[in-house]
Length: 190
Image 1 (cartoon, rainbow, N blue to C red):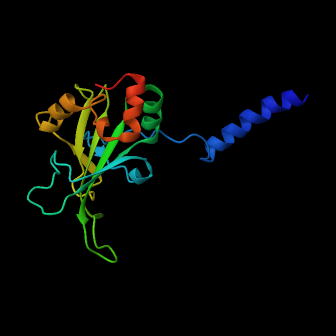
Image 2 (cartoon, helix red, strand yellow):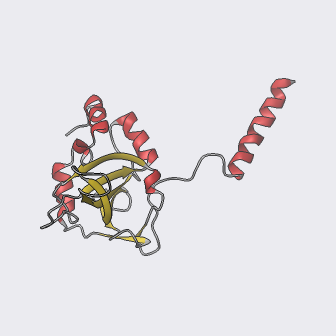
Image 3 (cartoon, rainbow, N blue to C red):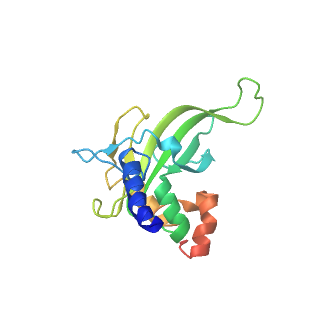
């Protein structure tokens, strides 16, 4: 009799949890509006942090003529990260976000080194095999105040640079130390 009750109660509890919002969450993949613009993921700072570079000089947000280097902070959705750990590849609907920040060297008690300061811009790289001919596309959110990101034209250098220099599936895994070893172990490193 106990087993019959368990078979009835367990599915009912699962259904109640889903209805109350304590069950599985909605997809963390990219969301688009009717115009094809990428919706800004307001919760990206809750995603998996991949790495931070200082003074890296590539792409449209590279510091040009500035004395202080910029920080590049890279985040990826939790589901894409989990899939990468399992396979060494990025699944369809992967979304990576780069947050570029200015740096400061003197402030408060700091006398040397650099720490992050003002936001310079936010960009995203999205994998969507059914939406983009090259599987991947790049979006700019400007200074991060825009609710939508505009897709960068496929003629921009980011497309060819990532295709040529991306260590795994169009992405710069060579700069993400926690994933580089995974790619090597899975045999997916270019």
